Image (cartoon, rainbow, N blue to C red; front, side, top):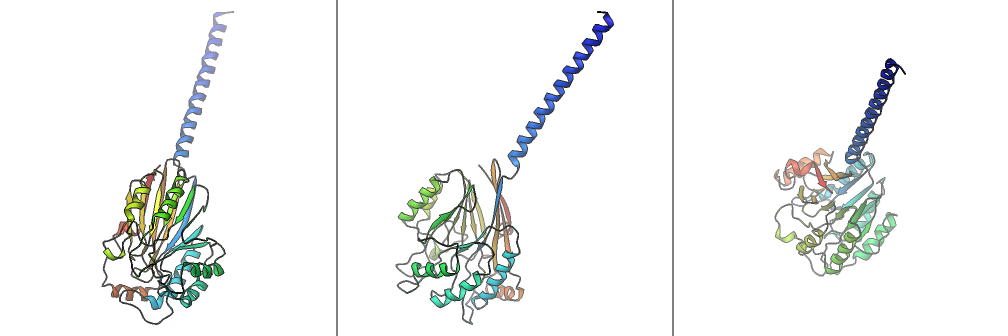
Length: 329
C-alpha cells in the first residue's frame, strides 16, 4: 500500500469517526431537549367554574348588601358565561345556593341549573338547610337528584375523580344543631378527609367547602371552629392541594407552601363574580390559573357596589382577583 493510499484511508476513518461523534452529540442534545420539554410541558389540565353564594331568592326585596332579588338573573348570566367557555369539566357551587332554607326556594333554583352544559356539584352552605326544619340535608339531596343526574352521593360530604391525576373532595362545614354562621367539619369527617388524602398522594387535590379553612378577612362570627385540625391534616401531605371556599363573599388568594387557598366572591354581592380555574399538571409543578368572571349585568353591579359603599373588602386586591400560582411537586 502506498503512502498516498494510507493517508486516504486514515482520512476516511477520521471523517467517519467525526460523523459518529457529531451524530452522538446530536442524539444526546435531542434527548436532553426532549427531557426538558417533558419537564415543562403540560401532561394534563382541568378547567372548572366555582360559583359561590348565589343566595337564590324568589322574593322582590334586596338586603343591606345582597342583590338577592336579582339572583335569578345573575345566576343565568353566570351559567351563560360558563357555557360559552370551552373545555369546562364541571361547575362547583360552594354553598348558599338559596337564601332562605325552604323547599320552594330550592325548587325554584334547580331548574336554572338544567341550563348548565357540564356536570355540576355543590357543597352545603349555612343558608341551605333549616335548623329543626323540613329542608334538611337528606331532603335537599333528594331534590337535587331530580335535576342533577351526576349527583348520586349519599352523604353531605363526598369525593370523586374528574380525570386521572386529580381528586375532588367536597366538605360539609355546616353546624345544624343551632343557628350560627360559624362552621365545623367534625372529627368523623376529618378522619375521612385524612383517609382521602392518604389515598391521593400522587394526585392534585381540589377541596371545596363553604366556611373557609383560611379567612379572607377577619370575621369572628363566620369562622371554621376546627380550622386548626384541618390545617394539621393538610400539613401531613406534600402534593399540590387547592382549597376553594365561599361564605365571606370576598376574593382572596393565599399560598402556604403546597396549599393554595382561594376564596370566591358572591354572585349577589359586589363585585358579583364567580371563578374560572384552570389547573395544569406538569412533570415537576402544578400551575393554577385563577380568573374572576364578573357579571355582565352592569346595572345590577352598579347598585351592588353602592350597597357596600365601594369597599375593597369583597373585591380584594388585584392579586386576589386574577392570578397564576405555581406549586412545585
